[in-house]
Image 1 (cartoon, rainbow, N blue to C red):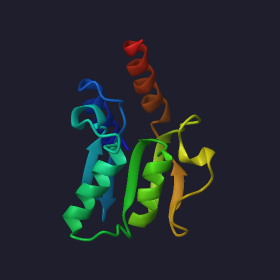
Image 2: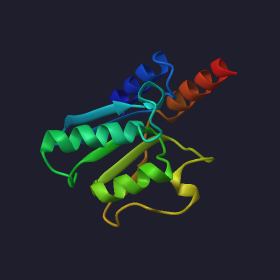
Image 3: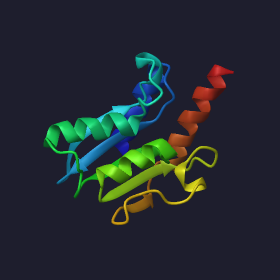
Image 4: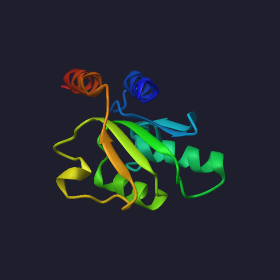
Length: 136
């Protein structure tokens, strides 16, 4: 999760909403990403999407079975849909997103995917609060 938080900090420095993600397989990071929606002018360029795409390219496969996604914020419904199709074995998120997180609309993950709230929730939340404070 620490590496995902580093990705979120890179997003913050680039004036992007500070969310970061990494995909891990066999204790090795095989995909990483942070929000790039402003830079790419693309509403789908969320951290999870960037990390999943990088991991799929690394593996040469569309399914990420036996992989874990670490993400600093609870995924949105769009990302949850993509994560469903990627069939990740495990998703660990740091901070809850009570407004836009997918858990507000009900589970949308693959039935075999394990979902956990992990460490660094306070740090991820503070980074988001600092970002939006700066914007206002």
